[in-house]
Length: 375
Image (cartoon, rainbow, N blue to C red):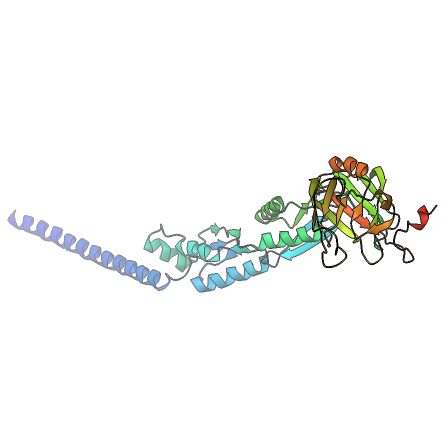
């Protein structure tokens, strides 16, 4: 009996030893495989796992630099794409790159390098060895940066812009008569909304944008033109316009030979009731005249004076010499009958436009009247 028990124990011990030996061999083999897998993965850790794409571009097995170069080529080709803006019948075309379009290539490649990072080392190595497709497609994000869109829209806006035209009464080309200019609306592209539309198109991948113009109202319309004084030197008349319509005409005196009533576009900058006259040329034509004449019947400017921006201290004023009205008799100022200048005075304000047109006839002498008014 004792021998039998010993024999059984020896058999069990032998089996155990065999099992232990086999397990050791298996563990050694597994450990060797694991170590080999670890070494393989570490040797290829600088490469993207197979089956990874960026915007459809296969970057599996590539290094960071190789993937960046390949995806960058796709981006450069994409940014050669064009966007066309249309306004009416006109078109402007530029590239996406010129508009500041960019792609986040570096970020996409870094995401590709991390693809499968949740897998174990052995699984990653096994995918590499067997070239198993990881099945990951990463997006390539585009964005628009810089001021490319704004600069392009400003250029388009400049090309499209039609300036509004204000209503006005001014000089004709020969300075002999007035020119009537009626108001006209302009047009423009609203730059803020236009830039937003371009950016929206870029984000959506569209290749065309249709923009529309909007009207630009003139500052001065036919209905808001207001009043204008027009002095006709060639016929010694002053017309008062309301808008484009003459509402009153008066006879005036203008400069005698040797003096000038300046032709041009002027403005009333001051008004005075019962003005004081100051001799403007005490050493010239005013020699022998008083230096100052206060308000009253003997004042050369009469009861009212409108000061205009023409050179030479030119005024529209009354007179102490009513017989001079209608003649070439002044030193440059525009004389009116006292009753007439008193009527005109409240009808115009400081800032009113004054247009002086035409010329005294070359043959006219002192105290002459215009040929058309000779009796």
